[in-house]
Image (cartoon, rainbow, N blue to C red):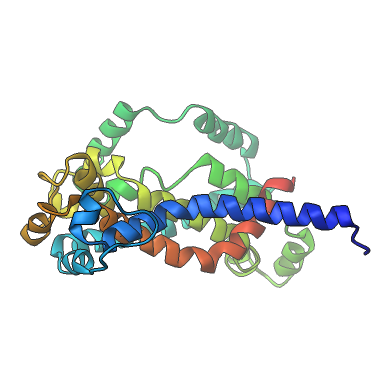
Length: 290
């Protein structure tokens, strides 16, 4: 393919534009890192840009020494991993059943799921249901209500329908039932869409704090995002962090906020590159196929 001068100019301008947009997205994180690493007098006077002034690591020493933050981090990891596993299991099972033409009542089930997609459950009935199920002040209240979603089901169902039917016929001739078809044929061939849904749900679960504010009563059960929300909104007062952390907050609040934001964001930033290639494949295939 012969590239003309106009093609090279377009590629150059396009690359510069994308580079600028990428920098705008990364700049806030760089600024937070610079603030958290700067000396208190520069951070409190808001004199820090994208480069730290008077580099020190006291903020991260306080964060790493905070037992309450590590406890909140472990709870966030727990509900994210287990909640994502439940979401994949429940949504994948339902989507597989809906993708099979032999399922009785398939059209009615699809219509009912579509209703939940258009009209999500209101807050008060959801709270009353969780209360009747005895899950208030339990970590299950953060994982069960959001485990299933019509959006996830439709994406998975569309992807499953793209798997050649000859594979199912061959497996059935060998004596496989529906459960074995799902476990041995569908799941190994559906890693892109499973990884995509896992990333969608894991990010949402990790960033969620509203459910914890509603359903949890004990501060020791608070996930990391609730601690971060209390820290930023209430400026450290009654935020549930330990005494060492509050002592540091009294003279470097902006630095502590920046450090905790990065501390809460780091796990997702570490996991995302490993799932990025599956994310692109799964989103495209799941959205374009019939």
